[in-house]
Image (tube, rainbow, N blue to C red; front, side):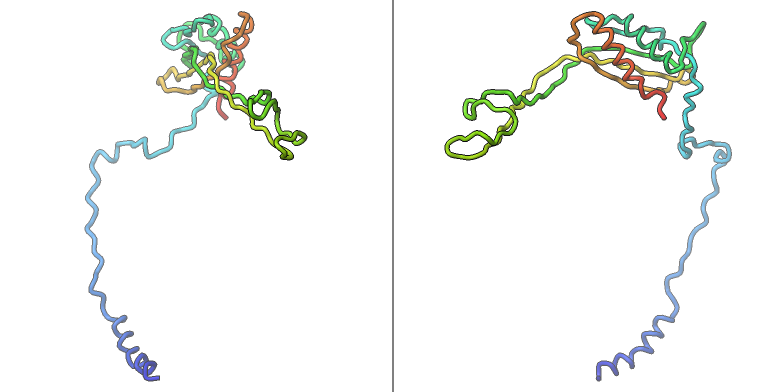
Length: 209
């Protein structure tokens, strides 16, 4: 009880302290005047870039008048013909008498890739022949058992096709993509088919939605 009486006695003083004047007064200095060139300067970084109008591009030509570069097992002329055919499917026609709306650059090269396979048909010196998971066999008095596949890693050679498209007006990149296919094709017809398939994959997403 004495504690409650003491709190009630100190309450008026606490309220009076809250209602007193605040010694901290907010103040600020006026902003300096804007420079004179601010009225005429346009800051492009303050605005989002306008959406690109891909319908504007109707024609194309090789960038710097350079035909595609090839590799040991593919003819650059075949790459040029494949690129021209796929661009035609996208409504882009070769420019006549001057640079087109798009400048095209293409090349192909051979690269190494690592592949992994799981071998389920292997004879293991400890487990014996196995394939997948088996429950019918018995070994050393135990009931069922599960086999573990062997993972093998090997190196392969692939043919990589890269295509770049640039805006002829300002040189800005418009599209860039690459696709690959196996380079171990036996016949020239198979290699040409793989090349055209790679070009089609590289340009399959143009124009972006």
